[in-house]
View 1 (cartoon, rainbow, N blue to C red):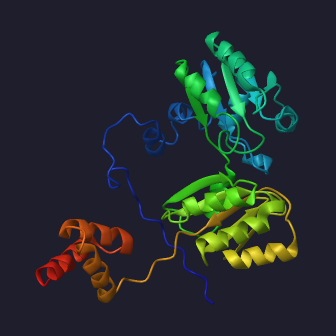
View 2 (tube, one colour):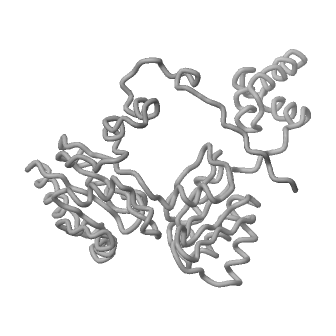
View 3 (tube, helix red, strand yellow):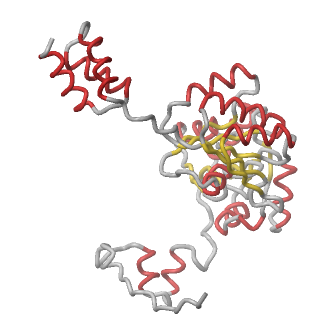
Length: 328
């Protein structure tokens, strides 16, 4: 195979991409004049973030690879008055890796109102407070919602400091549609409750994302196969770590694999494709449904019911209902 010839990239200006010719966008000044240090500084490209103002900072941390921490997260964790973590022992390893020694305390499901009151008091005193979880983005299947709600209701600012997320990492490696997705978190541990939860989301026209544990993985995949049918899916585990793996197959094949192979180690993301497209409803099936519906409903109501039940267009259902009603 011959080597591809290198071609010069086409030149694009902000104006040719539809951006206004004049504006105050900091990114624009950097793009049009990269040598201007003031522009780089305004978007944090070269200089550290300014001292954080009072408020609650929800800070994402790595899900495995320590180098996935963002520069802004390091600035925030190194300069806020306090850092609250899900598990201070886990967080201490991250902070030590970067030489950060903030005032550290625990905030988790068992710390309850006492810790929230302490944090709200700190915010009332004009302090800056960071909230982090053991790994990834706080509040995403991790503690923090009640704290953020309380801070917002009390009138304090809440700042997102985005970064790593197992949810998004698993989604983008699954090779499944990403234009619409639903994150359902952890499924119930008990079988009946888990099956009910799966039935509740089975008809949603979106890619589904779940977190799961190794010991429950095979059973959960089998329940998904029973609830969803032969959909494509992916199991991603140990994301960003040394033994990272993403296995793609149908749900029943994945269930069989992990039932035979045993429970995998590590944190697991399960991604399931949207519902399979139903076969197109034939004219005969549509007519049969409408004939029965027209015995009880008006033309409009029968057409609406057929469209919802058979997943046909309302226009098609209404046109057939008119014909059938006229010939009755």
